[in-house]
Amino acid sequence: MRLFVGDDWAEDHHDVEVMDEAGKVLAKRRLPEGVAGIAQLHELIGRHLGEDADEAEVIVGIETDRGPWVTALVTAGYRVFPVNPLQASRYRERLGVSGAKSDAGDAHMLADMVRTDSHQLRAAAGDSAAAEGLKVLARTHKTLIWERTRAVQRLRHQLREYYPAALEAYDDLDAPDTLELLGKAPDPARAAKLTRAQVSAALKRARRRNITDKATAILAALRSPQLGQPAAVTAAYAATVRSLIAVITVLNEQVKILQRQVEENFGRHPDAEIYQSQPGMGAVLGARVLAEFGDAPHRYADGKARRNYAATSPITRASGKEEGRRRPVHPQRPSGRRAQRPGIHGPEGIARRPRPLRRAPRPRHRAQRRPETARQQARRHPARVPENPHPLRRGHRLVPPAKPPSVFRSGLTLKLLGCLSARGRRGGGPGAPTAGAPT
Image (tube, rainbow, N blue to C red; front, side, top):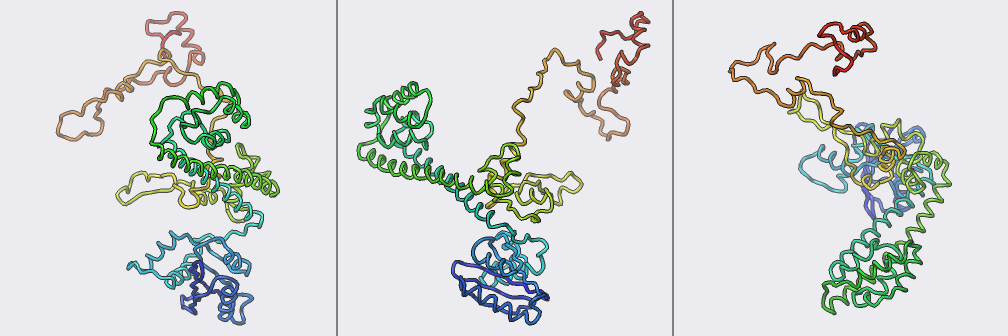
């Protein structure tokens, strides 16, 4: 016996529907989130299983793959299919084109979807707790990097509005020396009063090289003539810059702390050595790849299944108008969370890069090119179509026929044709080929 459950989840409740193999609706209910709700769901399913509970199979469709609720469903022994919301939306249009939508209707749609099309869906991965924890750390680490990039872009925008000389003086706005100097002098008036000792000390604490030249360049850029804003506007911008500097400083510290946690957790995983054996994959990138692919041993049948999950397999886009032609194949554009997985696309790009010790190809000069044949000239300068109104027939040519291939054009050389080369050395005839003849 098999039961199919559709679960339309929300933040504080779940709309569930239980369906049998024939598509008959057995029960509908709205359950609260938490322990009480999962207990009521188990009771509802057990009531319809009856005495065959040990041999029955419960299949659940839900539009998420994480959270305590999904973990409780997997722990209970249910077969859970996380459905992509885009897939659910397309399946809803399959059941009706009116555009109607409700929580109870979505629960019915999910139950019917896992009943009829569960073979087209991917079941929830049975990853280990270590892989799940590594996924949380790796994703949070990458999210903090994105947040730091957004804060830096906001800082750049603020500086461009009232203090453009700072953008010329400082290359990296998230560097420690830049944040220190901007914190001391967030406006042009204070920046002009910075001394060489202060700038050099900040560069030295940031472990910069060539401190003397860099300090000279920074002071020259800060003291150069520039357009400014009124005093009140400049003071307001300086206050916002101080706030952004504090945010970026905290993000820098937390990114370093999380990076150490990612490296430690990844180093303790048994598959870490395998991932790090690939070229160009370090601890952070390997942790992201392992976190996104998971460590379930039987989740992917082959390498193609991994490429499909990573959205890197080519896809075919063809219509009825292109019947008989070669179907165009386009690269897939990752969408959703997979578009935010640099670990999936990073190793492939690294593997495609040329080796650093690879010898560059020898350039060909114009003097080394062979003279063009009549066929090549005809391709460069195609002949005009004859003005004869009758269609071309078989045997008609638009260009003069090419000369029959000689023995030299067929790939043979004078060394292979000993008799001809001997005749050429003896001067056998005016038409005999010579060693200097072009091939």
